[in-house]
Image 1: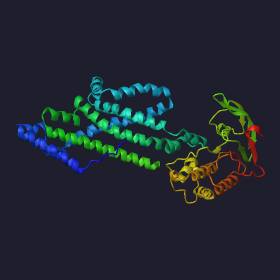
Image 2: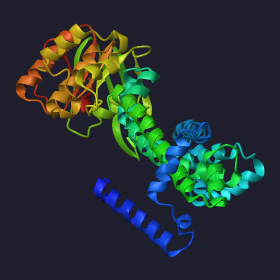
Image 3: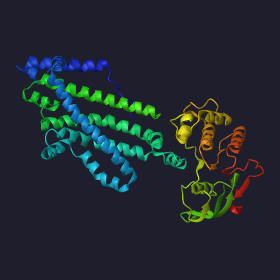
Image 4: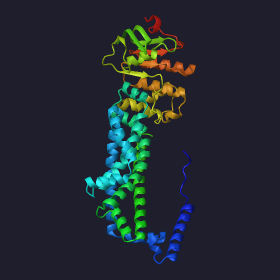
Length: 253
Length: 193
């Protein structure tokens, strides 16, 4: 793996200037050019206007609740099934085609299919859970598989209780795998969850606001809501990973 | 307490590893000496309940607790020495007893350091400390002096003798460098007695 490229302020500023320039150029070239590409400044102004409204916070909270709820449910299911799959080969073999299918099929196919079965309210939760499951399940399973059997033998000989074995051997082994999966899955579930909202249009959600912005050509709103999605996704990822790092510190990783 | 091993046989893929091994181990050190690859580790794994013999019996261990030094150190590398001992001992861990034994083994002042920075010899001595501190009725020690210099071998052997009084201790070694004391037994697999 190559070195991670950090986001440099000068590079971000450069692309914001390119965006501003493109927006101004379109506005100068066409009568309603400003509608084609809102400037970063107008998106920021719109974000400020939205942020002081109750509707804004309700929409963010509603979407976050559905999408993050799906993430948490899926994490719990993925960890439980990974533990079972590590113990029972049949469970591993049974789940393999399902996980491969979820990974391979485009998310939009699942969204449309799920819309046939579920109401619009449940759709983002289901879709975010579906997207989170494969990476978390596969990573946790890899973590369990890589646990040193000799350490487990040692714990068995010394009659170390399960809880202490979990904390001393299993968790330190699994946490780095789980952390990597969570980092990936949180981004995935927000993208997929908001896509589900845009298609299913559950009332009072970020996805519905995005759709409305598109219908009425409110491009500043479109960028403002997109910025909100990025910010909430990053915030939840940071909070969740910070919690995990605290747990890792407790088990001495 | 006596551990009685009778006619123990074990083979892997048709190759015999243990061939009618018979001996009795009472309180004190029973030295199991033989060249590498003679099946000593397999024997200890059977005694620890980690493998089953093809035939033969082991008696005297029913309901008994064993503590072990394994062929490898099997320490939790991400934890310090103290937390490695706590992992095994749980609520039975006593700081004073642990520090005293670590000092006996030449590890004074090392209890707070992560095991991953320990040398091979330090890890070996910590693995021995873990076995000696764990509540047990008998000790099974697989090459506990591996990688130790003369001084540390002497320290470890003294600690084993002092801390395991009255318990059977099965001690595997392939170099046979230690002098047995009265009361010790010697077992070689070709003429197990």
